[in-house]
Length: 62
Image (cartoon, one colour):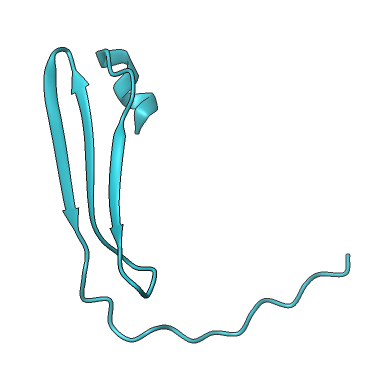
Protein backbone atom coordinates (compact mmCIF):
# COMPACT_ATOMS: atom_id res chain seq x y z
CA UNK A 1 0.00 0.00 0.00
CA UNK A 2 2.72 2.47 0.97
CA UNK A 3 4.48 1.94 -2.37
CA UNK A 4 1.34 3.22 -4.13
CA UNK A 5 0.81 6.14 -1.74
CA UNK A 6 4.39 7.43 -1.66
CA UNK A 7 4.17 9.28 -5.02
CA UNK A 8 1.30 11.35 -3.54
CA UNK A 9 3.60 12.73 -0.84
CA UNK A 10 2.85 10.19 1.89
CA UNK A 11 5.88 9.74 4.16
CA UNK A 12 4.42 6.99 6.36
CA UNK A 13 1.29 5.08 7.33
CA UNK A 14 0.22 4.54 10.96
CA UNK A 15 -1.69 1.37 11.81
CA UNK A 16 -3.56 0.56 15.02
CA UNK A 17 -4.92 -2.95 15.36
CA UNK A 18 -7.14 -4.38 18.12
CA UNK A 19 -6.74 -8.13 18.61
CA UNK A 20 -9.02 -10.26 20.81
CA UNK A 21 -7.93 -12.93 23.31
CA UNK A 22 -8.16 -15.56 20.57
CA UNK A 23 -5.64 -13.66 18.41
CA UNK A 24 -8.20 -12.43 15.88
CA UNK A 25 -8.16 -8.88 14.56
CA UNK A 26 -11.40 -7.14 15.54
CA UNK A 27 -10.72 -3.53 14.50
CA UNK A 28 -8.01 -1.64 12.66
CA UNK A 29 -7.31 1.96 11.70
CA UNK A 30 -4.86 3.23 9.08
CA UNK A 31 -3.87 6.91 9.06
CA UNK A 32 -1.76 9.01 6.73
CA UNK A 33 -1.58 12.47 5.17
CA UNK A 34 -1.59 12.86 1.40
CA UNK A 35 -1.02 16.24 -0.23
CA UNK A 36 -2.01 17.96 3.02
CA UNK A 37 -5.21 15.95 3.49
CA UNK A 38 -5.54 13.65 6.52
CA UNK A 39 -6.91 10.21 5.63
CA UNK A 40 -8.40 7.70 8.09
CA UNK A 41 -9.47 4.21 7.03
CA UNK A 42 -11.31 2.08 9.61
CA UNK A 43 -11.99 -1.63 9.35
CA UNK A 44 -14.09 -3.89 11.57
CA UNK A 45 -13.82 -7.67 11.46
CA UNK A 46 -16.14 -10.29 12.88
CA UNK A 47 -18.31 -13.31 12.19
CA UNK A 48 -15.29 -15.55 12.01
CA UNK A 49 -17.28 -18.74 12.38
CA UNK A 50 -15.85 -21.88 13.97
CA UNK A 51 -12.08 -22.38 13.90
CA UNK A 52 -10.76 -24.43 11.02
CA UNK A 53 -9.05 -27.72 11.81
CA UNK A 54 -6.36 -29.06 9.49
CA UNK A 55 -3.29 -31.23 9.55
CA UNK A 56 0.16 -29.67 9.48
CA UNK A 57 2.07 -30.17 6.24
CA UNK A 58 4.63 -32.98 6.16
CA UNK A 59 8.17 -31.57 5.81
CA UNK A 60 9.92 -32.37 2.57
CA UNK A 61 13.15 -34.37 2.74
CA UNK A 62 14.31 -33.23 -0.71
